[in-house]
Image (cartoon, rainbow over all chains, first blue to last red; front, side):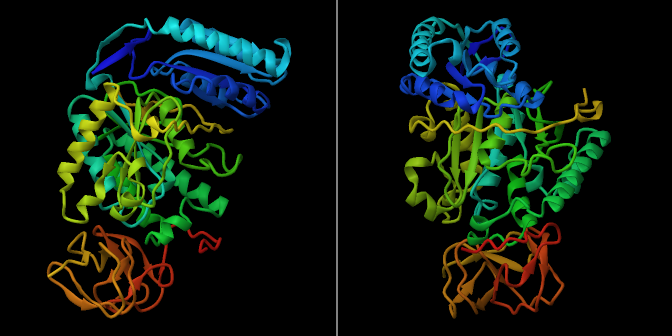
Length: 395
Length: 95
C-alpha cells in the first residue's frame, strides 16, 4: 500500500481537492465549481447552517485536514457566522493549499464560480506532486456501518465484516463501529470487551444515554425497510449490527471528530449530549459515515441487505451485500456478495478474507463501485458533545 | 433434502428463512422438520416450537423481544406477535 504523506504524519489513500460551502446559501456555487471536476474526483462537502456551531466547526476542521484531502476551497456567502478564517488558517498550517472564495466579494454567482474553477484547476496540478510513501495497516483506520438492514444482514455481511475487522486489528490496524442507538441490547457484552473496567462503565453510560434519548424522541432507529426485511425489534437489528465489530477488545470510546490516539477497535458515541435538542441524532446513514470520516477513517465498510447504493465524499465506501436476491438486483452497486453464505456458495471466513483483501486493494488506489459511480453523499447537521473523560481513551 | 431455514444458535426458538417459504410447505433445518403455517419470506423468522405469551424470542442465542401472543410452531414470527423489550416506535411503519 502507498499513501499520500501529510504534515501531521497521517497518510491518505486518496488525494482529493475538497470544495466546502460554509452555509447553504453558498451550496449552489460550490456545487457548480466541484461538478466541473467530477472526473478529477473533486469532492463537495459543507455545512448548511447559518447560526454558528462549535461542533460543525470542529467537524469541518477534521474533514478539511483528513488524510484523503490534499487541498480545500472554502466557499462562503459572506454574511454567515461560520468562522471561516479560523478554518482556513488551520488548513494552511496543515500544509495544504487553501483558498476562501466569498461570493459577496467576488462578483456573485458567476464571478465566484469562475474564480473557484480557476483555483481548483491550478491546485489539482500543484497537489499532484504530494509524495507517496509506503503505508502499512498500522496507518489505516476503517469504519463500519450498516444501512437498509434486513434479516440477512446479521447472518452474512455483518459477521463477515467482523472477520475482516479482526484481521485488520490483528495486523496492527484500527477500526470503528458506531450507532449506539443500534446497539441497544448489546451493552453488557460490549462493556465486557472494554480494555479497562472504567471504559466499560463509560460504554454503559453512553448506551443508557442512547436509550433515554430515543425514548424521549419516541422514535427508535428502526423502521419500514427493516420490518419488511424480517427484523421485528431494535434489539434484533442491534445484535446483527454488532457482529460488524468482530471479537477483539474495545480500545476506546470516541465522539465524532475525535481521532483514535493509538491503533485498535473503537466505539463511536453518536448521540447528542444534553438531551433531545436538535432532533434525530443521525437523520440517515450518511450522517454516521461522515462522523466516522471526521474521526479519520480512510474508508468505510458498509453492509446492506435491502440494498443501499450510497457512497461518500472524502473516503471510499466498500459495499457488502448481505442478501443474495438484492445482490442480483443491484450487483453493479455492490463490491462484495456476502449472500453467497446463505446459498452455501461460500463460508464466513472466506467472505471475511475477501473483504480484508479489498481493504488492501482500495487503500492501494482501486476504486470501489460507489466511488466509480460518482457517489459523494455528505451531510453535516447541528449537534453538541461534551468533552470525553480520561476513562474513554485509556493509554 | 433442501435446507429452508437456519438456526443461528442451539438455544434459539426461531429459525431464519434462507429463501421464501410458502405456507403449508415442509420446512427442514439441520435436525428439525416442521410444517410452515404461514408464508415466511427470506430473512424472516419462523417459530421452531410453540412459544408462549411473554416468552423471550431467542435468536443468535440471545433475547430479541417477547411474544405478545401464543405462537404455534411453524408460524411467522414478526411485528404481529413480537414486541421489543427496549424501544417501541409509535409510528406505523407499514407501507
